[in-house]
Image 1 (cartoon, one colour):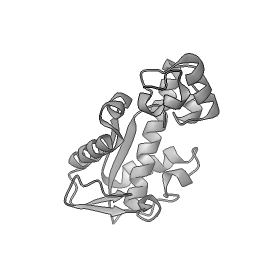
Image 2 (cartoon, one colour; image 1 turned 90 degrees about the vertical axis):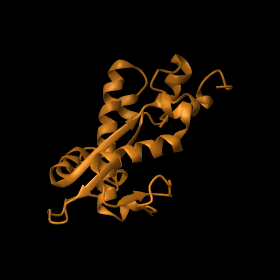
Image 3 (cartoon, rainbow, N blue to C red; image 1 turned 135 degrees about the horizontal axis):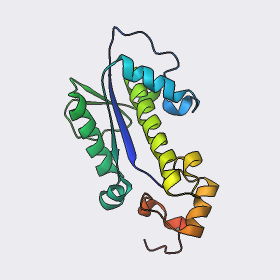
Length: 174
């Protein structure tokens, strides 16, 4: 995304809990169905956490440092016995197990993906009221044509990831 925080979810599913209907990679679930699935995850999980790292930290420290901080905080929040992460190794914890495309292969990663996406999307809808005209409610901060056009016409807001927006601003030296 060009705007908004990086959001990371962590979930410890209860193995005795019922199967969560529709649970999948958050990008594979229809937007309208995500909140109900996220609510079910939260009801049935042994523990869950969502951590948001603001855009100014992404610009200052870089996305990888912010992802590491977010994952570390989420893990501390749920006091994990073992950690399974989606994607490539971050190397922040010796217990880390990385599963490429994990949000499509592992229920706890999918659950974490869904709750993080639902919370971040809701935050972007709130930001749309604070920063009207940037297509945040619809684009969720991603680079839609309307969002890029608003950046070019109106400039950046405090929630924009300045380092990600060089191609959409007058000042290419950012």
